[in-house]
Length: 392
Image 1 (cartoon, rainbow, N blue to C red):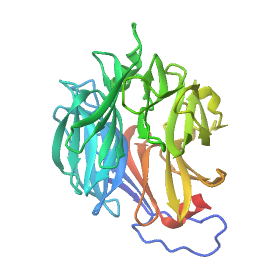
Image 2 (cartoon, helix red, strand yellow):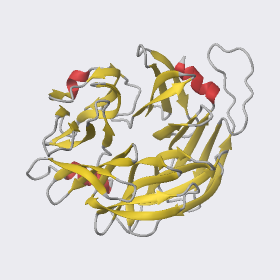
Image 3 (cartoon, helix red, strand yellow):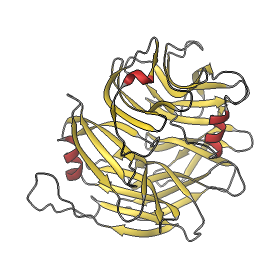
């Protein structure tokens, strides 16, 4: 894999008449090419390291129904440094790419045993360990202090499993939740893994009141499920519309308060301040939100809370119908829309994930199609000046 395009962006911030001088590491766009033109990459997440950035992605394997595993390490300018394209049994990596104590972790699967593996990387993207986790079919992961929150699927019992996993792969606590019985119930999950159906918004996380949650299948429906992991009975459930509607992104902002996006039969809605009961059964249809018809049908959406000049800001990222990546900044104090920024030009672009950077900027990773045909990884680095506009 090699760098194809390196573009330095000159930008004008709204309401700013003076010239802004940017250093090369503050603002750039990179696209990473592959001399094997038929390779297809699907980026997942990005994390900043002491040396630069690590980008996690999957790629199409001709010898497996599952997606292969690909890791690249780039420097602070986004220049390609090294990469590992796994040809072994490790497949189906899932978000998120997480840092703990100077090491970097993500979950994937063994394609033959279907068992979960926790991969540990150093800051150069080199694999240090591959820990075995007593679970199958990983779906989503998040950080929880010194541990991880893992959503997985038990294909034998047809249950969604929510687990707390330590950094060596040991399960500290877990609970299981029935997806329902009968033919075709697990079909959307298997299609998600095989890339033969829609990629579904599986999520794992923790609410402000200490309850864990997952966005996944429970009782025949894609639902946001809350649990204290004391038993296999949920504390609360926000139900979707089978696999055709539900929550597509969520982050906790206070007791029973969340910033969410949701989808319903292809339409997308954003609500940066919504109350969701963590102790009763509710419906995602009642969560409201502003419709965003400019987003692609069932767009991949990500929302995170970041500090911009000391101001708590909710950043939404998604993919538009014009094949750009859109960033929307909401004021966390009054939940008004501060600003909208668009990334991408010439080629079509779609969102994978983003993270704040130590210099106050943003690192956004996505997929682009070179010459409109070849799926490749793209990386946008935004300066702190540009990000400031999303917080004002």
